[in-house]
Length: 623
Image 1: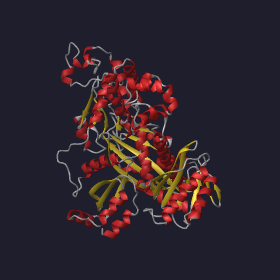
Image 2: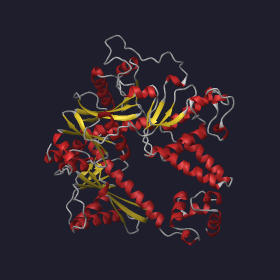
Image 3: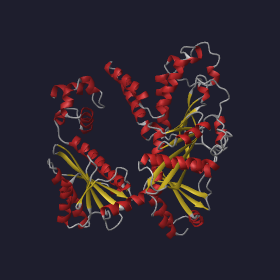
Image 4: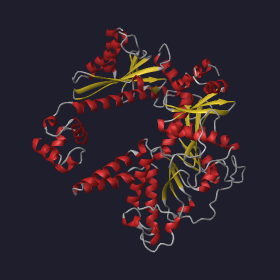
């Protein structure tokens, strides 16, 4: 590829975090990660190094995979490099990877942090998805051959094999969480050698890290129930661990054990943040080494099916497939999506090995489900937890496969714009009864957030939404007309509100002399308000979804800034000795207002970081 070809291809890529691949005749020659895929790929149009220049000249195609976070991009890049061994990547020779958490398949499972879970599973990892010897493709009337487990007892944990969760990037946080799980549920962490032939509990039992199943201090049924609680936590149910930690922290604080309460608070912070991006866990049930995730994006008479593939709990592959959808039939989007999946699954797996489990964005036909069940494949539509997150990621990749450019073109046609609105700016105002009034201005490029283009503005305090919107849009328009804004002019302005807010915004544009089309999107009924009239588009319209994303992000950004400004306003707390800006902010966020602080007890006040007993008593007396 030459520089022009790279630039042309880059213009088609999303401005999202993810992974990109340079390919030569279908062979992956380079894998990279990026915070912004489009900008990163565009930089290869003029490579600086000789090695990268040779790689670009050799490549004939560029593929990509969208992720939700930079951390997911980092992990996926590492897994793809290990899988494809691209010649132009730097490759580690020791085959080490990110840490995982494993619950073993023993009668009394142990929990451990490892980089190589279960030697048998590791040996199978490179053998492909068909190492179990299962049939390919739909059955030919023989009902299929179901997978077996060697006659293991049905209620024993080892019928499932080990359960693996990960990979994780923050090993310290994983260690904190695993220790908290052991203290709460008493799951053993000792080796098989130490577990066997004991006649009295070890030190872990004395310090509360283990319930000592080795000497019968806990019955097997209770122990297995505790293990299942640990599994629920790693599958996304944070409260399984957070709730008992919070109760223990509150108990320690009420008993004036402040050092212990502070330690529990720090542990609670690590637990509550674990599923918010620090862990990036992908759960893997013990007998499900290979898991495929299918998401469908519909656009008229065509569809895109995205397939994510996970092996031993690690996301390692992503594909997109274009599918034709027959005209007519049911107009319900869920029914149509299920029909697409029902047609796709038997065709795709006719010449491929079936995975151990299939996760769907919508439920396929019963006939397909019966066939998968006969083949021993677990098929499900997850509603929450990490599996639901994987389905959302598959849907995101499917939409980027075809829908986004079409959605913007549909938006142009629906609003009768002169050009496709590739750059959209969204505006919203947030305040509390006219105080701490702020406005947000967010930017979207090709349907995706361009956070480098976000701006915010503190406005004059007044309880007038129309006047506030006029001031916000006028501020943006004046800067554009006078050349004081370094961002390109948008193709469309989206106002969060109804006809009144849109009228104020258009008045501001006219007064500033800035010629940019503007529409509004009202929250209650999702009506699109334009100068020509009001539109009630179908709830599944892709071009409506584009406007909703812009509107919701403008609202989120405005509310967050309003909270910051609200906490910064002068309050009675400023006159209390020992209360600085940070402590004042923590008090207001904890209790909501000065009145809430006034009504709090000394014990409740002391739960706030930076507030000791003397300060809490001073607060009560002064307020």
